[in-house]
Length: 391
Image (cartoon, rainbow, N blue to C red; front, side, top):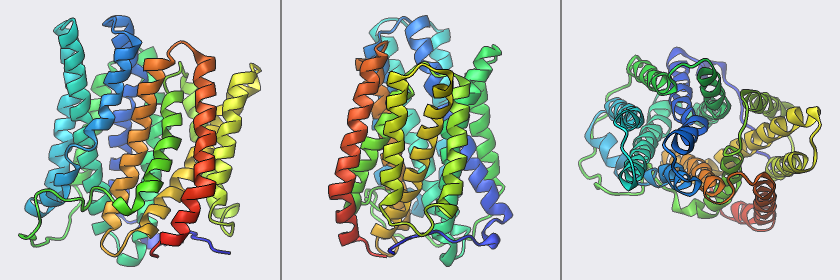
């Protein structure tokens, strides 16, 4: 069978790789902590309408594209570690801006514009930091034959943040601690971890253009990009529902089951089996959420969602890597990251702007989008990928 299983090399897990992977998780957690908490503040404290709350939350996705064209030039012009650290520092300042804006009690349309600007800055700086971290720093600390494995495992640390970040934020808010402060603290720790890793010196390339798609966007992967955006937008819509910390804890359990299934269930399976199975499982979870109210459904639904999105994320990441040409590995990483985050931000916009307080309609929309993603993948994206992959 045509499979793309990822091997495991124990030598990959050296100190530098551990530190960068944990930094990736903490950095992503600091951003995801805002997802369940910030909309509550906007709507219930600042009295902003659900529609404008959706715009504010979705503005983050637009910010992801702002600094991407500069990424390759920046890492050639300046030290890669410095670029990543400065990006995270500005990101921390943007998170602090939410607290400052509330303390100053800005009202009216100015308040909305302020929050939109802060979300765009957050998306831009987090996007640049992640592009440098995943497409450059982590790769630089690995041998060439270990880089696919390194990308695969490091991305799982970021994926864990999808459940750990919101779960931590909900627990902290119930304990009446400052979520913004903890979010800033996690991002600050990620800077310390990145700064503690030594990287070999590389002579800058003076011929590098200021604006380019290198380390930013793999245009050859446009259909994978579109399909992944469609899938993760469903996840973003679900995150606009009032979910408990237990919901996100069960998503984490689903992630762990997805990790095990990659090695023991899908190791020798057909290439499309993971994505198709993941989408079917997500659709089943949505149907259970829509039609069932039993206690057991509260366990099964988030577990299925975590399992489905976990195996889909791993497979799409490898697809992006294998679709890229030589020296485009970093670009493929960034494209996967942008698709993942943009899809979630799009889902946050749709969920709050059009479906807030209408759970049944929201879930029906998610089922339709998941079904469309499954049809698109099975009948177009996967055959197209098989015809165009380069590795």
